[in-house]
Image 1 (cartoon, rainbow, N blue to C red):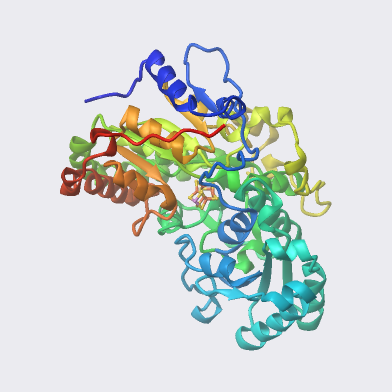
Image 2: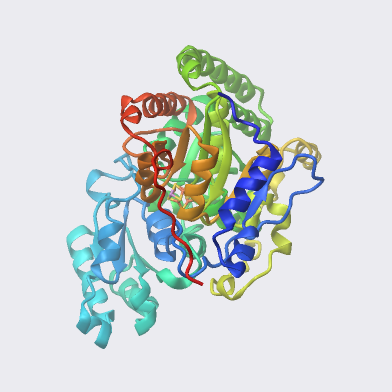
Length: 548
Ligand code: CFM
C-alpha cells in the first residue's frame, strides 16, 4: 500500500495527538521544532534548532566531546587522540563509529592509531588535585612508545570543571618533543549537542594544522572531500569513482585521513562538502583564508551521485574530464541498474522515517527514491536551521548563551596563499561568473526544499514522539541510531542503523547503493516480523500520564 502523501489533515491530527500529553510549556516548545511541509506555502517556515533539549526529556543527542573526538578528529589515523578524563568517555568511544582506516604509501601500519584507546583514566585524586601531571606523563609515554606524528587531547566534562589547563600541557609537550600537540576544550557540556564539538574541532584543525604543509599532490585537478568520515568504507567508494574520472584526491576530511594530508588541505583547487553540518566551518574558513571555493555534494544515491559528479566536472573547464565523467556514470549506472531493478520490485512504494544526526536524513532521501521508496518523516538530532532551511538563513540565526560558548574564528585572507576562486579553478573571471549562475558554490539549500506536502520535519525528536509517529503512520522502515533501533524492532518495524550502518557498508556511491538495497530488503522481508505483534495490536494498552 502506498502512503507517500499523507493527507494534511491526517498528519496534523497525528502531530496534535503526539503533543497532547505534554504540559503547556513543553507543547509550545516542541511545536517550534516541527514543520509539516506544505508545497503551497511561499516560503519555508522557520524551525527551531540547535537549542537545549528540555530537561527530563531524553532525546538521541550526544555531547561536545563526542562531536570533537568521536566525529571530527578521532578518524585522523596517524594522530594519537587522548581522552583526558574518566575512563568511561574513552572506553565508550573506543569502538569508533566504524570510520575505517588503512595503511598507505605515506602512513605505514604502525602509524595508525584510530582503532586504539588512549585515556588518562582520571581517578578521584586527579579530580581533587588536578590531572595535568598525569596528562603530561601520558604524553611522555605515548611519544616514547609510539612516536606519533602529532597528538590530540580531547577534554571531557570534569577537565573543564576542575580547570585543568590542557592548552598549557599541550604547549609544554610540543616544546619537549617538537611535534604538534593540540588541545581541544570540547568538554561534553560545551554546547547543546555534539554539534558544538564539530565546531571546536574545526577551529583547531583549521587554525593549527591546515596550511602548515607545502606539498601539493600531483595532478591536474586536485580536490578535497570534506565531511566524509569513511563510515563502513563510504570514502573509499567515492575515491574509487573520483580517481577514475581523473581527479587527485588531496584529502578526505577526516575519514581515513592523515595528519600529513590535512597539513596540505589548502593546496587543493576545490572543496567538496558531503556532510555540511560537521564541516561547513572549515569550508567557509578556507574560502575566506585561501579563496578555495566549495561545493555541496551528495554521494548517497545513484541520481545524486551522478548529479554531484556532473556538477564537479562543470567546475573545471575541461572537456576530457566531462567526457570521462559521463563515461563512468554510464558504465556504473548500467552495471548496477539490473541489480537495483530486482530490489526495487520488493521496495517500490514502501515508506521510511529517518531520524539521524545532522545530514544523513537529507542525503538518504535520494537513495530511497532510487529504490522506489519515500521518506515521509525526516528528523535531525542536532542540525542547525541552515541544514533545514538553507544557508541563506544564517545571518538571521539568533546567538544564544549556548552558541556564544563556542569561539568563532575570524580569519582573514592569507597574504601569500589567497587566490580568487577562478584562479583556483584555472579559468577566467568572466567564465567563473558565468559558471556561478549554474553551479551553487558555497551554498547548501537544506532538507526542506526536497520534501513533499504532508511530510514532516522534526528536530531533536524524543522517544515518546517517535513512538506515536510509528504507531500512527506505520512506516515500513525506520532509519535510526543504535539507541532507538531496538525499541523500533520491538514495535514490529524494521530498523536500519544509519550512523555506523550496523555491520555493513559502504552505502555511498554505486556499490553502496547495492549494499543498502540488499540490507533494506533483508530487513523488510525477514520472517521474524511474523513472530512479533506490535504492542498497539494487543490489549490492554498501558498509558502513562505526566504528573503536572
Ligand atoms: Fe555529519 Fe556524520 Fe551526520 Fe555527523 Fe554523527 Fe555520523 Fe550522523 Mo552519527 S558527521 S552530521 S555527528 S554525516 S556520527 S558520520 S551518522 S550523527 S547524520
